[in-house]
Image (cartoon, rainbow, N blue to C red):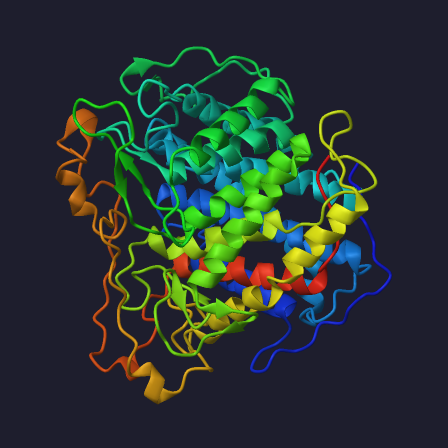
Length: 531
């Protein structure tokens, strides 16, 4: 069973100047994503790991709609008044898309590739499983139950391949990013291992299927035969141990710069065994993936250190966008990861983001939204395994997260205002039409300069052919393999620039931030969690 904490005051959703309620905007955004980009089996304009993220965002959206229905008695304030597309109808339609995406997912290509790519698949199917159980609690429905074993098995196959790669011989621990390249222990791969491990511990239902092949034709991985898959029970202690040891390793290896932002990763000098060459590049998704893992670690252990660390990471990001004392700066100046209170990647303003980078901000807000769910006080998530919060801690968490609400909705407003006026697709640069920046101030906006020692491999993939990356055709490594760079010619007149990147990836990022804005508005202190 699932347990929902209800609150007596049901807050009506105020309209934001220039657009509808956040819930209505959320409904519109998810429908625009699916109608424009989903072909019935996948999102063909997205690469394989990106389709896993988009499917995760789709499942998370179904959870948010379900939560809103239950909290507001089936009558969600601000919902679009369409009898044919009620929230319940949308939930079932979008879940059918999850099922279709399962069949259309190119798991043979992702399996055995980079260790971060594999973990997006793990998180994808655990999020879908979370939705299935959540919806059953709300509607007493069998929706999706027949797929539980299949979804769990796919998550298990991919997680098992990743966990075997944890290595203590270099850097004292952690995972390397891409086994076809020189060792690079980067933030995203290791943050994902924290999140995928704890999410497996909390949500994985167990799997006794020993077939370790992701497809019948995928018989080897990295040149070796695929052996039987070990069985794995729900709440296996090794999963919690993996999450804890990985976060301890991450904290002890200096991944933070002077602003408290997570940098991209480390190489190891020739003849050394320690991480000693730090790449100072900062990406938005590296700031977010950690948050879901920290939230899960608190649930499993009751250690408030994990929550406190999360608050610190979030505050660092908010400050780095130019958000100061609850208000955005309006000078247009770069602050480390954005300007005027809007989260940005370095590539957003001039439209030089790769397809990968266009999804990064959405990944951040998806994880922030998960982290800020209220803490359970009356009953543990899993009795005997997880913990409950004293009322003082639950109240403190609610109040702290409420302090992020204006910033989250400020970013959602930026995403909404960046939409293409014809297609309604959300653009890549949310600060493009910032209403709090006048034309004279916008004239001084310039593309941010990368930090000293930063190498932007996401948006300049040709760097992988040089030292210390050493992509030299080893084991099939190709510099531009599965990388699509999309560049746009920008006007030299900065006052006329617009967010010219309108893609499935930018729409996915927009969906995540608008969903978060809607959740913060509809259930500022509501609680639900999967059991």
